[in-house]
Image (cartoon, rainbow, N blue to C red; front, top):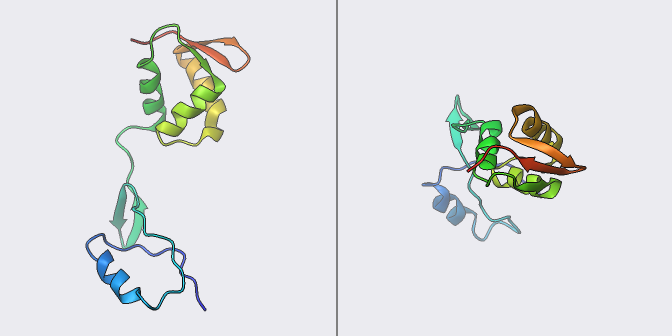
Length: 116
């Protein structure tokens, strides 16, 4: 028995592969798309987004009303929504303080200084 872990298929050819495998596969995870996938030199890589995570995070903070109190959990939710890892919370919290977008209110609480 064998397992195939990573298999990248063009979306226009997926149906042909699934038809060929039907009746032969014991179990299979459902196919899922690769976001921002680009083939470069025969390898599939994720294309770089137009804006950096840092910029997207600061843009989402500026959309909040002035003097909004943010808890650490809310900041982690914002990070997740823009496609980041919530484990990077400390970096983003320090970014808020250093860039002047927020001030520290207490432990794990920040108040926005720039916004709508």
